[in-house]
Image (cartoon, rainbow, N blue to C red):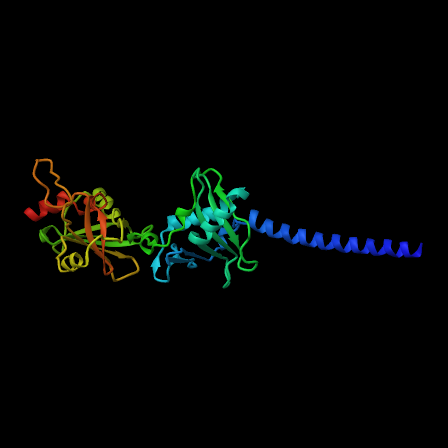
Length: 345
């Protein structure tokens, strides 16, 4: 009887211990499962201080928030595109698990993630990422993206998931690119509010048309040609022209030139030079515009063959040769009637 009682207590203790171990194991497993399944999103994107993106081809992009600045810093040297950074922050906040990866596709998905996943580290201050996303390819339906999560402390979750964003149909991987030229902010002139003080447009082929526009502290505009103020002009028209120079963007930093073509262009005199001064700087931002050979024949309104490309020009800006679009610059390059008539007189 006593032996049976002792055996009963022993089995009871053993069962309790086994239950305790099982509960602990299931709890840890649930924690890891929760970490992987539901913790991709970043609730407080305002506290995201740094984003690091790396791909399997060696490409990298480091984005850092600059306190008090309008634009994030790219790779420690350039302004980053605000629209692209904002899209990442929006993705961090709104991303959600669409479904777990099925057992049938799990091995293949894990191989794809191991071979081609982009790594995205998200920092909220400190030296360690609070979350790390490993972003794979799109699903066959192109409505979700295979991803697996890490958090910088627990390592990488074992289970991949399909992620999506509510209200968005498509995949997310294309938002996380690493090419520096694609991330760079394209603003050339960027003078918010009333910070633009003076603009100079120099026509190298017809220097008599060159002119400057300058506003005083009261917003009154003065237009000068050959160092002399125009006696009479349409104030509203010139104010509108002046405002065109507050924000000017290039098309791409990739000029598509060969080294030989770049050397030739570097020795070419610009057709037009534009300079703009802020209210707080004595040094202007400078854009030198150069004609571009056409890639196909086009004709003007009189049926004459256009000598130059009607869609794009080259520009020299901050020591680089870039591509700009004509529709951005044509209105700014146009010679006002006041200037033409004054030049004739």
